[in-house]
Image (cartoon, rainbow, N blue to C red; front, side):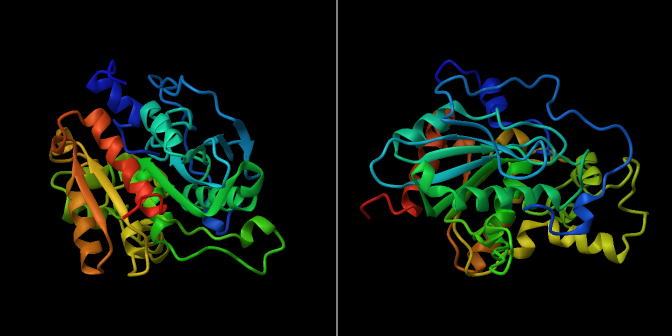
Length: 329
């Protein structure tokens, strides 16, 4: 990790662009018009070159992108699990973009690690991305015993779009359906904690405009997420009742209630420019809202550390251990 340049580290985290259950809502099966984007950015290369996953490309749902990799921590007793959700503007990215140092530190701490893929906006609009990720959580819970995982101790960790999905899962009401014929859907989607980095806490452009200076609210990835044309004008085009409902439901902060789990949110000072969709004001807004409800929210910037590449990850792992009840405190 010490050999990574800052640029390489940002790439490893999936930083640079807004990160792109079986469908539970009809709108998630709607396919947007226009060319289908690749699931990987042209410049994207796998980062996780260390330990090979114990479980590779395992299917958790019917779509070809419903896959996950799993690294199992060595332990005689069931281990907690952190699930990495990649970024890419909801329209790209891949589960291979794992931060190797984070992977190593979690495994050494007795925490298993999974990385998932989900449908992208070129194939299905919101809420497919969130619902796929929820199903991944449920599927792993359902099969936890075979991988020596403690189903009661699961967390989500992700950057940009993955940060939004992580928060959405953390704040959303439990999606378990005890009456479902599918045993996977009977499992809980609730988390012990979440670690979003380069985070947005809302995907409602009307709210983003109030939080972040400049034109971040006009990011094309948001338009594609909702199946809108790229030339959609948030200032002039009419937001009808259906779109209004999608904008509100997609925004993690709108699901926040006092019974939700703790969050560790992380941003980079370089993103604090007008129009940047990874602006740290999202983290400030998130912490303010969580503080109002008395929920722990640890907010950090890369400038808080002498060696952010490693120190930030070390603190994230400590945060996980705390909320997995692995510390004597």
